Image (cartoon, rainbow, N blue to C red; front, side):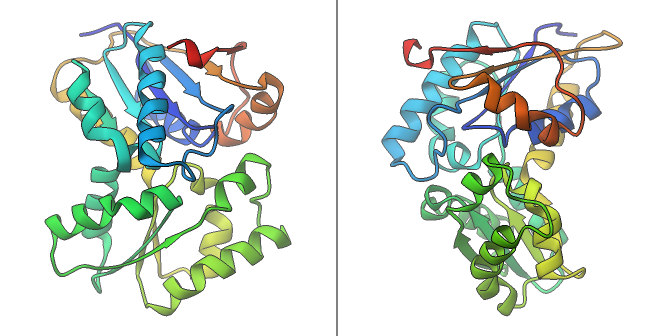
Length: 270
């Protein structure tokens, strides 16, 4: 039993999809979320910058004495996880390994699509992990740099012509490759899931990286006896930029009204 909170962070609002899943499967946990909205997106940055930002994000969350941290950011997971795990003495969970495992278990024809930020795709992390799990899997990867700003600006719903055109532009080569599974390699992308599913068709399984990471973290904490013993937990949200902009969209990511006040953090201090 461990009553300490679980920390969760992302470059912006996308990690709220992982927070939502953690609240669903671990309703008794206290959660602390940090969205680095002042520096979003991470996916256009170089590896050293991504690592620098991620270390600051973790340093801030560690002020709450968390029992674990969930890296709800595909870009950080693909580019900085090993360094974060080496430098911190607590469990740090990320999206790459559980998402790769889910894709390998899902595919029937061994053709998997992968979409993510430019930095995630450039890292090759998802492809390496899938090759380790099953060398026979063929991965068709595509960077989708416009997806995060679309989602952060609320342009993701079916019927939004801009979102539909961008989805078609990015995903046509993946659809043409005949994949039967598509990894949404960024936690912002589940907001585009309906639009993506409409384009890819009903026979393609979509892997929500935030959800599979949250389930992996929950299973591991349960196995280690680190879950809290309380009936109902809560969460707190922190951002590095506009509170108003975050509050406006957060309820859409969470699928419910936002609880409590959002606080702004001078993340450069950490």
